[in-house]
Image (cartoon, rainbow, N blue to C red; front, side):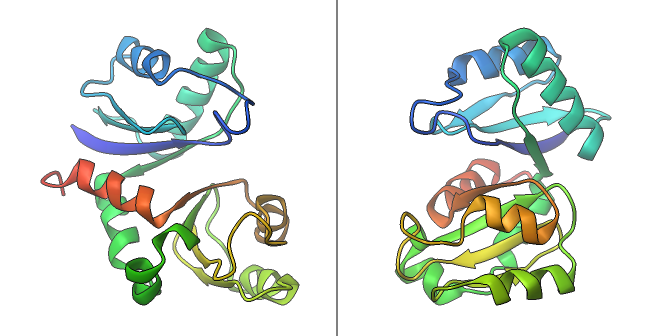
Amino acid sequence: MTLHIALLRSVNLAGRNHIAMSDLKDLLTDLGFPGVRSLLQSGNLVFESKGKSGTALEVLLERATEKHLKLRTGYFVRTAKEWSDIVAGNPFPAEAKDDPGHLVVSLLKQPPQAKDVEALTAAIRGREIVRRGSRHAYITYPDGIGQSKLTTALIEKKLGSSATSRNWNTVRKLHAAIQGAV
């Protein structure tokens, strides 16, 4: 069995795409995934899988969620090892310690290309900083996320991939939830 973390895109935000975490847990359990746990109300799941991984697992979960829960959303699935690598590879250790609410990890469906990260960096109008990961990007928002012009829409457009983001506090909580599995 492989331990996975799944992040859902844009659920339970500002009254949109509302879904109960208990319904998600039940769905994954019914699909045969053991050990399903949720974290917070923003679509963060930890579960085990035997055999399925990566894109195939994301597609299965997206289709099942739409069919059974009537919600169309994207899933971004990483193994416990990949998640630990994300945490270990953080290029912003000071921000992670001093301002974790303004450091985010944006998971991507496609690996970001260096030229696309350069284009995104050129489009930034504030003090935000972007660093590329394997299938993710690290972004600091020193002046806050809410008023920033570096939006998910801009990130997706410039990086050529759909994305979902979590702040460093959530990243750490998910990492704590998988400790001992890596």
